[in-house]
Image (cartoon, protein in one colour):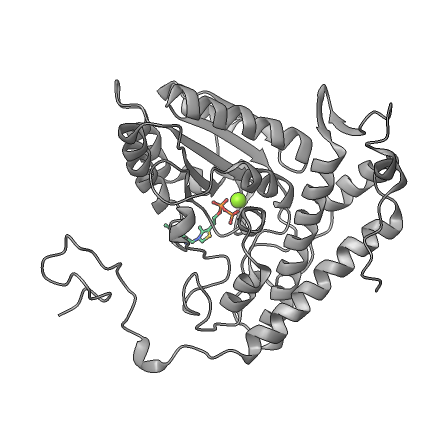
Length: 363
Ligand SMILES: Cc1ncc(C[n+]2csc(CCOP(=O)(O)OP(=O)(O)O)c2C)c(N)n1
Ligand SMILES: [Mg+2]
C-alpha cells in the first residue's frame, strides 16, 4: 500500500478561488465533504475493529464478542459532538455495549479496544477483566459500561443533577436499546429526569435495531415510536435514521443543544441495523437484508464525486493495517495475574472512612 494519501479531485479543487466546497445532503440538511470524509474514516475504522474482534472470538485470541456493527453512522456523529473531559463541566457518558464508534470518534486508540478483547492487563478500560465494548474512562466521564442493561438509566439522572447544580452546559448521555426501553429502569430514568422544578439535562438515546437478542421489538412495544414513552413526562424527542450520518449529525446536534440550553431531558430514537446478530453467542455471522450504513454512505459519496473507488479501498486498507498492528501488539502484552482477581472492584474514595484506599472495599 502506498503511504501517500489519495485526495479526491473534487476536494483537491476545494480551496481554490471560486470553488464551492462540496456538500452531502439528506433532505434540506447538508454536511461538508470534509466532515463526511472524517465520518467515513471513523465508521470504517469502527467496522474493521469490530470485524477483527469477531475473528478473535472465533480464533481463540478472545472469547465472548459483542459490539456495534450497524451503529457506526450514528455513534460516530455522537462521539464527535461530545464535550469531552472530566467532571461536571463536561458531558457524562452512560453507554451500552454497542458504542465502539463513539469511543473511536472521541479519540480512543483502536489498540485499547483490542487489548480489552485480548484480555490484556494493559486494557485501560477494565485491565483485561471485562467483555469487549465495556469501556470506562474517567478522564472522559465515560462511566463503566455494564452488561446488565439499563442500570445506567437510573444513574444518568444523578450525574445530570450534579451537572445542573454545577452550572455550565454539560449533558449526561445515556444509550440503550429498544428492548432495554421496555424495562423498569428506563421508566425510572424518565421519572427521575422530569421531577417538577428539578428536570435534568439527560440525552436518552434509544438505538432501535428492532431486536432484543431474539425477541422482536414489535412483539414487545405497543407504542409506534419509543420516543412516545417520553410524552407522558413532557420529554421532547425525535426519531432519526441512524444509518444516515447526515440526518444523525443534525438530530444529535438538536438534541444536545436542547439539553445544553434548556437543562432538561430529550429523547432520540435512532433506527439502526444489527449486522452481526446479538453477539458471539448467536454466532456473530453477517446478517443479510439489513441496511449497511457504510455501504450506503459510500454509494452517496461516490455518486457525488467526493470519493472514488481507490480512496475507499485506501480507507479500508489503512484501517485493516491499524487493526492488525493493534492485535500484534496486544498479543505481546501480559494478561492479568490470578492474584489480582479481587482488586479494582470499587473505586477508591477519600470519603470512605473504613477503606479509603482499598479498591476491593472488602475487609
Ligand atoms: C437487566 C438485564 N436483563 C436481561 C439481560 C440479558 N440481555 C442482554 S442483552 C439483552 C437484549 C438487549 O436488547 P436491546 O436493549 O434492544 O439492545 P441491543 O442488544 O439490541 O442493542 C438482554 C435481554 C441483561 N443483560 N440485563
Ligand atoms: Mg435492540
